[in-house]
Length: 187
Image: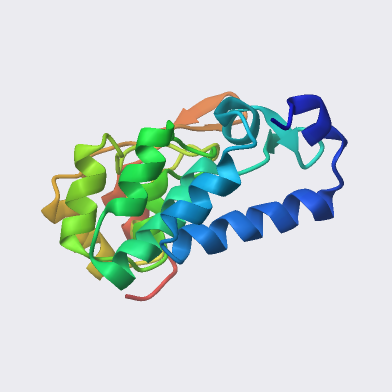
């Protein structure tokens, strides 16, 4: 078993190479090899301990690792890899400070209704706020991504959700409609 101290001593290139390898295994839907890869690590050490990028983030990004499993689903139309990673201990609600798996899926153009329903059932959320105080709903409104907004609304996202942005000594709380109206983007 590779311990946390060893992980912290690894170079950025070594960790980056391992992350690419893991994501390749996941997106290839290779459960056996993914299980074999992960057997040498403790879940907490690689997905939840800040040991990467000057110890500001975990070695493997949980939300993006689950997103790789979404890519596997799109190729195979089965939830095996997602179910494996969730049973391993990852959570669909895991956020990297910017997005959770569902938000990444929508952000990168995903629209499979079965997959979105699956992620919602596993407690992923459209309303999770990133470090910037915005959710995927606010970002879609800002960039006038009307198809993504329609899809999000179809699944019951709160279209009255407000941002949580702190500017100087004020809290700025805007709805997606307020953001869309002020956006310089064209639909």
